[in-house]
Amino acid sequence: MTALIDPSELHVRRERWIDAPPQNIYDLISDVEASADWTPDLVSAKYESLEVPREGSWFTAVNSDVRHDHSWITRSRVYIADPGREFAWYVVVEGVDATSWHYSLYPQGGGTVVVETWQVEHVFPIMGQSREELLELKIHNAAGMDATLDALAERASGVAT
Image 1: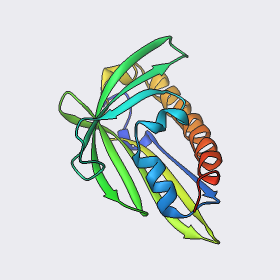
Image 2: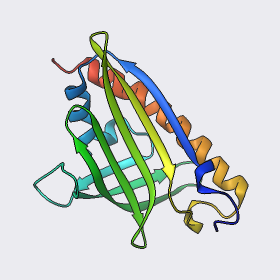
Image 3: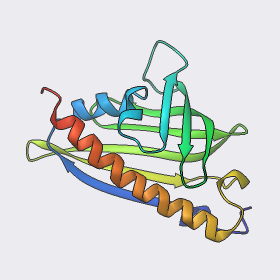
Image 4: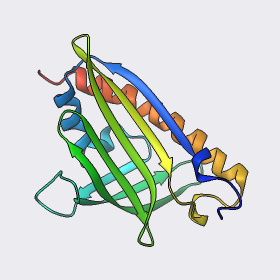
């Protein structure tokens, strides 16, 4: 699969200023169960432990892709849980860190600049069977990230500071 595309090409970065303090945004992002309310492909998610979120925590998610009319389950491991600053996890496939989802939070002007990144670490056939399919996944995820940040901004602005 790696011959189809260099994983470094499968990277998306989105940035958005949100009118809420970093800690409020962190609390929303790290609550993976509630994330289904503002993340387009996420149907549900649940931490596997009660002591969450922290580095090393695992969660399972059910995802759905209306483009291809299918659903799938992922298992993810939190690798950064720095309240008010960063939250990140790897989606793990066959014991390998396949993709990274990362949020960085920067206070600015009474609100927060939220930077969301997605990076493929290791290409698996389930991601796409051709270079075109993999690039389509990148475009799809970029649009989903835009929608997520829009919905997160709306949700965070309604959270009391």
